[in-house]
Length: 262
Image (cartoon, rainbow, N blue to C red):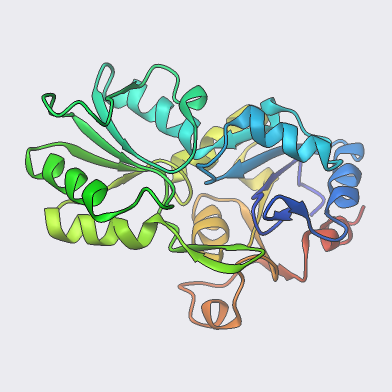
């Protein structure tokens, strides 16, 4: 812990649930920042922009600005700019994230005459109905590439666990016989982008998350120290059946300063 210079933190399920702060989270983040550690909030959330996320967290008392937030949509924009500049994209997502998709050409849903080069799958919601999924399937059959912001199967809200787009993504991949390029967590590039913001090496950073596979074990494979919290989507059975072992397990983000010796 003495070598830690940077802390990567998931938001949903770690700092908040349904955007309401979890007990002790605000104070813990303040303490970490006051200790001089670099912080980046890394989230697969696809329902809000970076600015909107920072505003909501700021109103709740978290010491956060938009520059501290790295979202899966922003990572998707960077990925497409590098790999497919100028690509015409069909977007399947619930939430207004256009501000974070800088430079991405997103086709209007009513444009039935243009075949997209890429199908982008974001976060699930009411818009993931049969017509939308079948339209995405048709694009894939016509040769479009599949890019997914994440593979999350579910997330936790104040109403309990809710189904996420990873469940639908599996069906699209199987039906279209393709494999999605993932731009958010658990992509190694996503963690590397967060570290680059802080000028930190993997061995100098830890990742705190409630998703043992996408947050913690994926970060460990990228060379970071992984810290699993028993909040949010954490379930004892997913912990038990995981593909690896977290470096550390704590009850909540409020316990992180103690783990860091602050």
